[in-house]
Image (cartoon, rainbow, N blue to C red; front, side, top):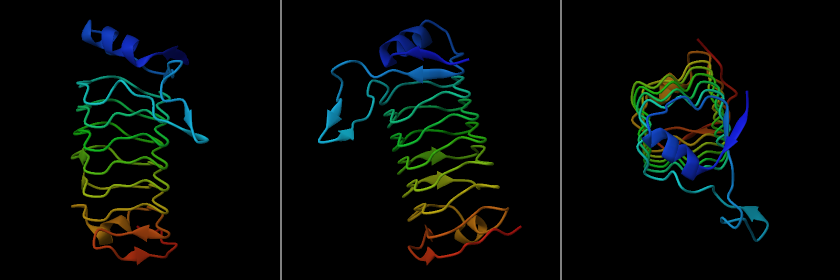
Length: 179
């Protein structure tokens, strides 16, 4: 089920004790950033928010700015986070199974012990992020510079590597997909 909510309403309901926002779509408030020179801006209002343990399964979080937020143990199973800002976001122990992170920015994010199986991260940026491991993930055109993840390990566990920037700055042209 998809339902729509503003960032202000989500925060108010979360702070009142509600945790289940499965299937939610975050609405852009009229007049918020809007279209600037033909480019859609980010949906703001959740930067730095404490959203520990929130259920956002299947949520549409496209272009939502969650930078600096605490999403420890959040359930983002199957969530769409295309072009989202997740810089320095805490995603420790979060469930990102099958999440779509295409073109998202996760620079400096903490993904320690996060479930990153079956993630689609095409064009995503993880510069300086803390990452455990990916499994069966699409990591084409993804940037892992200065990450603490094992660069060679990215090329295994059935991950798709193609034009992917490794932690040491080298680019694996690929395509690679090995066990």
